[in-house]
Image 1 (cartoon, rainbow, N blue to C red):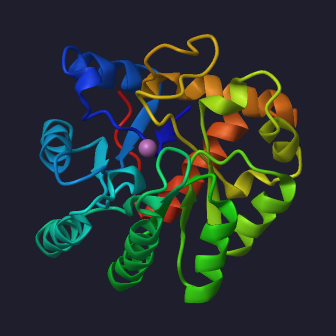
Image 2 (image 1 turned 30 degrees about the horizontal axis):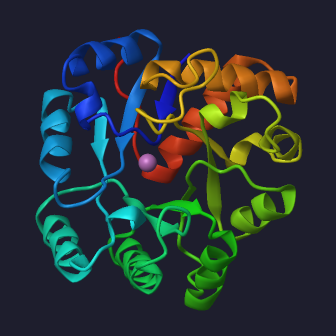
Length: 261
Ligand code: NI
């Protein structure tokens, strides 16, 4: 079985002591595609370094995370544009709206998000969307910009059936991670109503580790635990979850999977 982790921040400090081992763990678990969403101008270099070390398995993306939208957001945008003009990336993100942590820069977050949608269109790249306490605002922006060709992922999706259908209606896939393994989360019910063809897998490592690692550092080798849980909820085989979600991710990002370890 081959898997793709469509969302992992393996370049962060949390992995400084054992990054190579963590990649090897992923490959041993069959996770041969690691998509790296960027955070801000400080994370681009470590991200690209990781991609140089593992060019067959690591895929960089570029964008400004909503919680990194501060006073200097115009300089950060210029940074993203400059990288895009000189380097190949596989997606725009992560970007979006986060109204949970801090509401100081909500207008700036919205400006940056709209700008990232334009970049995704201009470079024909999928958009990796981060949403926290902002689902309706994100939907409203997608309606406003009205880009039927726009594709991407609602990262860490955990919404209602209605919200899932709205996201899918905009041509987006739903990124499912460790949260699906948590007790009493509404995504388990939502998932029963959503076809596998709309799903991709992700860890968001080092955050949101699945059960039985909940609360500890997450890593891409835990992807099969997420696939197993989805299989259990949908009453299908883990093989089917692996095959379909890997195919979905490859199609979305326009890649072939790396060689099996
Ligand atoms: Ni993330």
